[in-house]
Image (cartoon, rainbow, N blue to C red; front, side, top):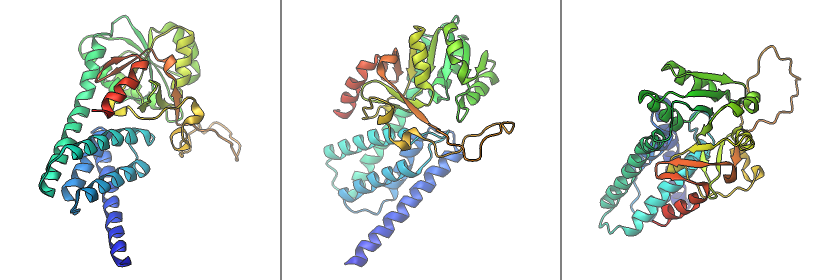
Length: 329
């Protein structure tokens, strides 16, 4: 009897290893969004699964998703949140699909799950264009904008605005500890966008001269707040003090069922980076440096003006209603 359990365990271990290897390879060799990659990996898992029952297949999908969340790197040093929110919504639609299916064979069941998976990919692919459309109605040539960190959807919206002849003056903090703002600066200036790179410590001085703040998000939580790169919260506080609007651009697959009330409510795996930050060689640092190196922070909803999403433009208070709609439909 134990040999049967051992064989099953070995098979699952092998499956999980393949899933992680496939995710890592696609993430390193393609420019596709991590959320699309995650679902594509799940599509291959469903296609190649040897499970003979619906219960076995759903367990395999759920286990593989959790394994990816805990072991995969989403790119640009993102936290587990960016994978967890996608997997949670994907799992919801898979479970909902299974409840409604009347498949008479495993092949028919797999076919239906693959159709659901492709629908989710299509939604993700369209999300950036939907957000961009909302933004183009709002952007203006006269605007001076402070952009926080590196966000695919923020970059895409700004570049598409530039192509449409809407050219704003962009200010970009370096975004330590990973200096992601430098990558944002590089990509925008390559197409001729007028940008200025600023030190993180200069945000308070610069923000009084800008018209608005734009940022992405790693997750949008139930109360309408966001979890994003460290420094987002600080920037939002400065924006509120200077009475500057603070706008978030985020795809709906980043909506997550978390409800933090403060920084301490974030788990250590979300808050802290395991990587050593880089310092200038000119700095003479102590050998035993006691360093706090946070990766993300939580920005509460009262500091956010609006969220631009592929489902529409929302106030923070409306986000919980949208989450209810997603998980009740």
